[in-house]
Length: 202
Image (cartoon, rainbow, N blue to C red):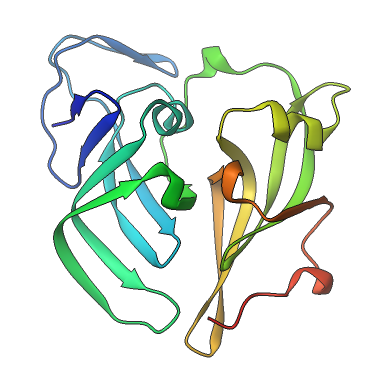
């Protein structure tokens, strides 16, 4: 189940449970007591990669991430970066200020919330991570301006996340990621190329 107290959101992974509210996601309405969909979730913190599944408490993952300050991940797989090593832990408390980027899986968000947009390629650096993807901005709006006026957690599509694991550079493609704009060190328009590969050593 998902239990929320104030700004803290408890996300229970791999433990489906009925909900007590009516929801609409995409084309489908979810009745009182019916389960909301789960999404695959990989959260990249300042020092770890955390993975599992999470049941949404909003029609879009981006909205859920912007609505809460802390997340308790239960039964999470934690992989330490860049040295390696992993363990399954019963509970991890993660603040939104620690989350550089979140890789979200299906299902996609509420279609009713979508508006006509133009897609622009962006490349950005956030701590140990290099992130490339496309921001969806209103027609005629500068993409960097669109990034600045959003809430902290900003979605990008057709994305990739790069980071070091040991001596290797790992590239993880993702149809959608949500980036914490407050942790971005630099950003530029364009595509991922050799100029962008300045990943920190560890």
